[in-house]
Amino acid sequence: MPALSTPPATAPLTISMDDRDNVAIVANDGGLPAGTVLTSGLVLRDHVPQGHKVALVDLPAGAAVRRYNVPIGFALKDIPAGSWVHERLLEMPKARELEGLPISTARPGPQPPLEGYTFDGYRNPDGSVGTRNILAITQTVQCVAGVTGFAVERIKKELLPKYPHVDDVVALEHTYGCGVAIDAPDAVIPIRTLRNISLNPNFGGEVMVVSLGCEKLQPERLLPPGSIPLVDERNVADIGENAEARLDVVCLQDEAHVGFMSMVDSILRQAEEHLERLNARRRETVPASELVVGVQCGGSDAFSGVTANPAVGYCTDLLVRAGATVMFSEVTEVRDGIDQLTSRAATPEVAQAMIREMAWYDAYLDRGRVDRSANTTPGNKKGGLSNIVEKAMGSIVKSGSSPISGVVPPGERARQKGLLYTATPASDFICGTLQLAAGINLHVFTTGRGTPYGLAEVPVIKVATRSDLARRWHDLMDIDAGRIATGEATIADVGWELFRFMLDVASGRRKTWAEHWKLHNALVLFNPAPVT
Image (cartoon, rainbow, N blue to C red; front, side):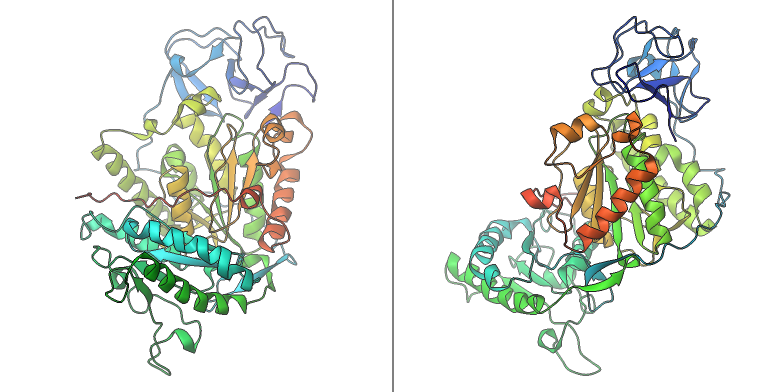
């Protein structure tokens, strides 16, 4: 639990994360002016903005500046106690080597199972469970996006009202499919990402594809035989032991299409077949273990690691105890805590898989002649995060304290339950896209600076790190974790609030604000392969 310097009040309020820290962050709205006397008696030498750090002791040049009891930097010059400590005064530590790491050394005591919690979801032919009932239209290439988008608008206006049990129709638009080195080794990442998004649990096993015809990513390459689950006898090519799901493709270059409306009408005809089957589905009560939750942060500030992310971490532990699956991600935002992660690996094999993903990404960044320090944004720094090391410490706490039971490479689908590390870039929209491919049916997104991020494919629950943000963005933020900073609520209080809110959202009893306003970010496929 973060140490608050004083109870909730208008008095100066600072927060330190560990008794051994030599800096604390200022929690007061608007920051604190020079001359402010803290409860410890320390006098501020500078104005310190909200979320930014104040030196609690004299820090000589070269001294380690500690937050979370971790060196987040080294003083570039003498920093007197009471001074504002910001990124221009710090030298960033080197990245931890990927050798000699603690492997599966953390052995947390077993937590009692969390039983009796349920939600109302949609069971799928492959055994997964959806939280929404959506028709998704897969596209093989960006070229068809305009036609598909036009058709989707007509489907929503003309067809969807006839099928009240279908929640939405979504075009899986992306920027991939042609003009790329399709046979390059790393091309497998965007291809399997799009394939696995098409099979997300919220789509009910219904797969419909719109293709141009001449693109490199042909439908059969995207969704080869055996990759589509059987829904019923109407979408199979054979009956009996040799039954195989039929790939439903509308090809725009097909000679049967004469004019634009011919293409659109063809998409509508095929969509109606899928809508009929989806409309026949009903929610049923399932255990909370069927939740597959992606956790992510964006527009982060210094409060992310104090309020929202610890609350999400507490909720993560609740979900794991309930038998659910939770995925945390963002390679550059956990890279500086790799020793914390490998020590929590359930097995040495899991630890080695995490190391392998980190090493791959180190090499990927190196090819681009950058390193992990390229991660932090101007907004992160304005919010008090001096560098990626400090940001990483606050990001990792979303994962809670449970053992890490598996690793999901980018674009692959999760095949097990528990706490999983799903390797993704830290980019919000790429991370969300890859977590969709991994199979999430619910998404949790924490933010301190504020972002209207959302996904069309799964509900996104937004958690504000600061009460000021929750007040100003009252119709965009679902949970206010800022109450933790002022002592109005504990991490456990907000963690349980989030857990119960998830069950309501998953059941369709409540909508998130992102759903309410239909705020949807584009799918952005991670493509480390060359573009031709």
